[in-house]
Amino acid sequence: MTHASALSKTTRTDGNVHLPCTVDVCIPVFRSDPTALVRQLAEQDGAVRTALRIYDDGSGDAALTRMMETALADYPGPSTLIEAKRNRGRAVARNALLAAAESDWLLLLDSDMRIDGTMFLSAYRKAADEQGDPCCIVGGLAIDRHGVTASTRLHAMQSLASECLPARRRAADPARYVFTSNIFLHRAIPEAVRFDDRFKGWGWEDVDWGLRISRQFPVLHIDNQALHLGLDTASDLIGKYAESGPNFLRMLENHPDAVARMPVYRWARRLAGFPGRGMVTATARAFALAEVMPARLRLVALKLYRAGLYGEVLHDSDR
Image 1 (cartoon, rainbow, N blue to C red):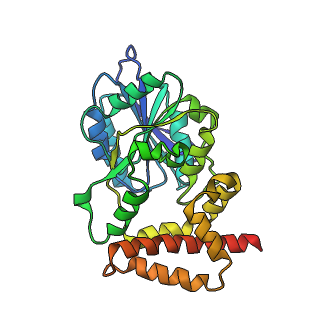
Image 2 (cartoon, rainbow, N blue to C red):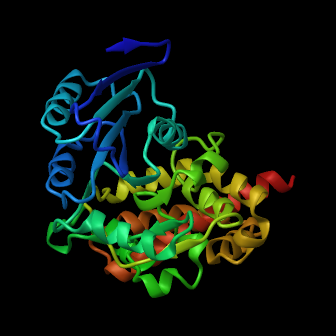
């Protein structure tokens, strides 16, 4: 292991230097265990030879580090574990992973994803070969409906309504749906367009990046979903929304035309000029948290809550 001022890095090779890897799998981690996903990746079609890169964004968990090191020691291809000394956010983590990758094609997966079957990577390679040129291919997301609990039902509904969409729906607005928890891309893309590390905390950095890369590279959508296992409780989801306001303003600054087409912006703009927006936001939050309320009403309340938060930051920015 070598040490730098902000990072620790462990790299393992398998000695098969005559068989170069064709895909680098890049997984950011923050206080979540990726070892089940590592085992699934090890079982993929052997025709797609992979290297594995994991970036721990300052978890500070020695037990988690040991589990990841054990999983990587058993991985059939080369692997790298990069440990940040402090948490710096998802944009920084992804930039570090993409910089560490060496193959021409890269797969970005979140640590709480699950892939089914052994042909997941082969499906991406087939789509890339058919395209021919450097591109970004979005496989899409799904959720395990059997794993949904009362406390995560709101997040499940939100995901089903806005994220777990078939390829034909995503392709209608391709740059908008570059959810980086499951994308396959050519290394020319991150070399030309980095994630904007001015986005802090949670939210919008992947949408910003998707819109920027679409100006230079094709963004394709296929049905090659990965299951999202890490559903948040309603209170955790609301907490993430509460910290995303500054990122929303940066999105508006970077992409005013694209943001203006979003329903959340139109509602936020209306609420920005409404004197009672604080009461609306607080009431919507209470309804979204109330598990006894009908699920569809809670989802509407969640959307109104986020619009109210963004209406507040719009109001403050207008002054």
